[in-house]
Structures are given as C-alpha cells and as structure tokens.
Image (cartoon, rainbow, N blue to C red):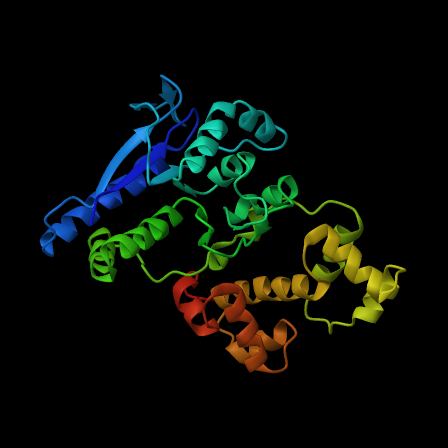
Length: 327
C-alpha cells in the first residue's frame, strides 16, 4: 500500500496543537505498524500554507512548506473571537479558503478540526452536507451556514469526501479512524493504547456544559425555549403550548422548526437530559428517581432518550462524570 500524503493547512491564529496533533499520532501509528511487521512508511506528512510566514495562536511561529498535492488536507481550528469578530477573522483568511477549495478540486479529501469547519464551509464544501463542529460554536455555525445539515452531537462526520470533527481532542478520534481505514484495526488499537486514547467514543454530547453556551435571546423560538426550560418536568402538551403563545399547533411547529431546526418536544427532551446529567453528576438519587424528577414516569423511556442524547446509559454516565462524593 502506498504512503498516504497528509497535509495540514497552517494559517495565522490557528491552534498549533491541532496542526501537529494529528501528525504526531500518525507518527506513532507508523511506529506501531512497523512493530507489527510493516516495511514501508504509511504516511508522508507536511505542514503547508499559502503564506510565507505563519504565527499560530499564542504567538508560536510555524515552519511551513508551499501548498502541494495531497491525499488528505487537514484544516485545524483557530482562536474564534466572540461576537462579530468571527466574521472579520474569517474574512482575513480568504487565501486559506481559496487554498481549501483548490485542494478539494484537485481530489484531496478535506478534514476540519473543531471550528476549522467555518473555513471549510466558507470555501463552499459543506453546503448540502452533514457536518459537525465544536458544541460551543454549533449555534453560531448553524446561523452562518443554514445550508449545512449540522449534527452537533457527533464527534466525526464524513459526507462525500469531506470530514468535520468536534473540538480539539476529536482530532484524535479522526486520526484513529484514518489509521483504522489505512492500516487496519489492529494498528489503530495499538496506537490508541500507546497514546492512552479512548478509541470507542461516539458522541460529544456528554461534554456539553450549558453554562458556557450563549444566552438565549428574544423572539418566538427563544421565548418558547425559555418557557419549556422553566419547568422541564411538566407534562408536554403541544396544544396547550400553542395556546400559551397564541398560535395554532401547526404554526407552533413550523415557526419553531424554521428558527431552530427541531421541534419543541426535541428541545424539551434535551433540557430534561441536561437536568438529568446534573442530577447524576451531583447526587446519589437512583436512576428511576432522576427519571421522575425530569418528567419521565417510565425509567425505560428515560434511559432510551438519555442514551440517544449522550451515547451512554445513565449508570455509565454517572460512573464517568460523577463530581466529588455526590453529597
């Protein structure tokens, strides 16, 4: 099997750790493959840029080569400024979006890490595709790129040759998937063990911290969301909810979905799961008691919804994320 040509696109303000993190893991994978009998290098890696000089976030200068043909082009994330500063930051990276577009046109598989998805989307490669990004910036991404089918719960999403990942450490989930596809599961497992990485993660949902999410503003959907969030354990009654806001049930569903991309029930379920996560992390209440506290009489129904949102059963979630002694 020929060596895979992997390039990482460096640019001003990018995270240096995301430039080198995947490359370092691929280097480890090469050593694991050699220990298992491989006789030729699996990867040829490089850091490239359309610029002559690149300074990463934190002031770290990066050594870069000129753009070259690649089998895989990786676009790292960057220090995303708050508010309108994001638009200005992306506007300054026009040479990078052009380079991404050109590399994709020449046949490279494009991969974004974290908020690198903004650059890939600005290059026009995500329209009509499934994608993910950091949960912290998912709402801003969805508003900026409504033509992208965002799946913010996912760690790694690949759609027709374009891959996007969640934040920071998800670069390793992608890299292990790449190693698995290129060198086989045995090398991927060995690499994960050498690097002390979890090679079985499937979702970023358990890591969402709602205290860090932007505050919900005002408008039809935000007001409905705020109403549902006030009493998440109350029985869900679509007709009563619609009357509360002076609209028909059909209008409620249409307007809410137009503004958020989901239904009021889906938002309520997410709010209930957030509350349940907090109770599992900080109390000793049984799973059945937690289910009742957040509005589910049937623990089985609660468990199915909880697994769908977090990728873990409630007991497994508690074991992984319990805070202190629970008292």
